[in-house]
Image (tube, rainbow, N blue to C red; front, side, top):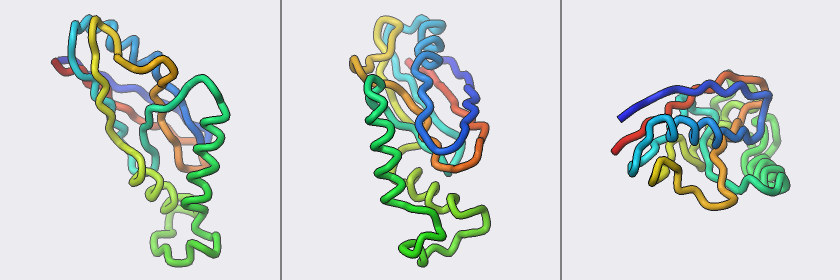
Length: 140
């Protein structure tokens, strides 16, 4: 078993791919078989596995989640109580609750068994830049 951490500097809402960094960690561990666990240590961003070929997918996902949970000052969000950290904070928590903070990816022959067009992304839900910590854990 092995573990490491990554820091991803975000520049606001969007998807930040780190498939390459995860693949490099798995390759360094030379595991024949196992499970890579990816965990983000925050409550206002999340992790997703998504298509990494067409940037339109990322644009559409971002637009969908913006419609699903608009900023707290939008009239449709008048029910929100938690507003102390800005208009994007509670919507970010909602988006994170609907996605994932942890992913499990099978590994064989020293490689993640992702599909052809799959990439691993940090999904930033806040407007301002953040330093996000991600833990990678390789288990047998």
